[in-house]
Amino acid sequence: MLEGISLTFAHRPGEPVLRDVSLRVAPGEVVGLSGHSGIGKTTLGRLLAGRLRPQAGAVHLDGRPLASRGFRPVQYGAQHPVLDMNPRWRVGRILSEAGVPDPDLAERLGVDPGWARRFPHELSGGQLQRVALLRALRPDTRFLVADEISAPLDAIAQAEIWRLLLRLCSERGLGILAISHDAALLTRVASRQVVLGG
Image (cartoon, rainbow, N blue to C red; front, side, top):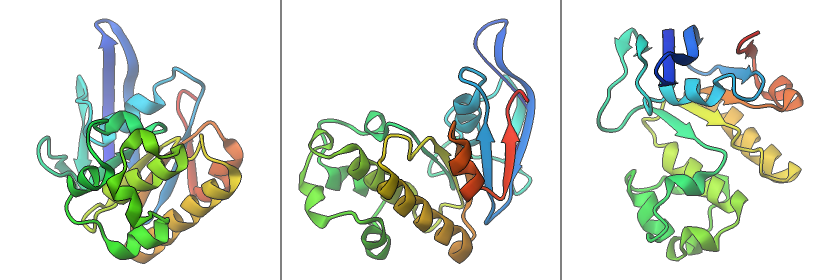
């Protein structure tokens, strides 16, 4: 179980983006998170993935604090994955940061082996998102915070990626927090929805 417990976070002192927010995601569950722009959805996602530390409250995985160093079994998928990639590295090196990529998952995601020789700027947004998911979805990844991951993709690519993610939920108990402004998408993929600030 991934739990955010009474989380409070402010980018500037005295101006909390989140105040006393709690959320839980169970293994194999897809929780949809929506809310108007600026309400703190991305901040909450980054807190749950350990990319930010709350000023108050805690993030727990199976009842224990989420590790602050090393590989975390909670991974974060961003709308613009290129921002998480070193532009001077080839894709093969970027993927190897997380260990040897799973060839079966690479095939299912449609990651072409030839991309390993390219730089991030040489791939399309959809290709980069597939690379980012391959890097994030290691065998020991238990939860994925999917922050608008399919927003820049066309309808076909969006459907392909979510179809695979839902299969991974079923096959290996992957839990997903799906952050999106797309109400129709969340209705299709989420088993439960939370409106932040609602």
